[in-house]
Length: 184
Image (cartoon, rainbow, N blue to C red; front, side, top):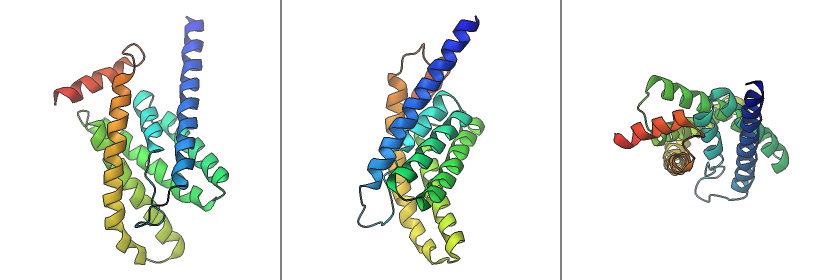
């Protein structure tokens, strides 16, 4: 029994390491892709791995993935100021996503992803405005909200397909959630 528990813990750590590594790679690739009409905006594909960790394991594990990818990503990208924006928004977004999953058990992963993406963008905007003491950038919020919603749809669809492709024995509770989602 004890050996099985250690094996499960080792497997969980390995999966979280893979998710954090893939999230870091996506984070770094996104930082290289400029979006001309929205300076500073990113596609949000690194969130695929945070949301997957949240669905597979829970909030503490998702926060660990967010922490690893944002700290290392900011250091590797050479933009430590990015850390404050990304980490704050990532933590808030993951917490909101978990709250939605708890309060609304029949909510789709797509809806959770869209809400998380929009809140992520708005949290970054709040951090920026708090640091600079200016509210002028709030004029940017409608564009960030639309961009976040679009990115959230893409991320949500990818995460849903990813979770459906996982073997049922690997994540039985997640498989039940997906089955409920397919029926609605």
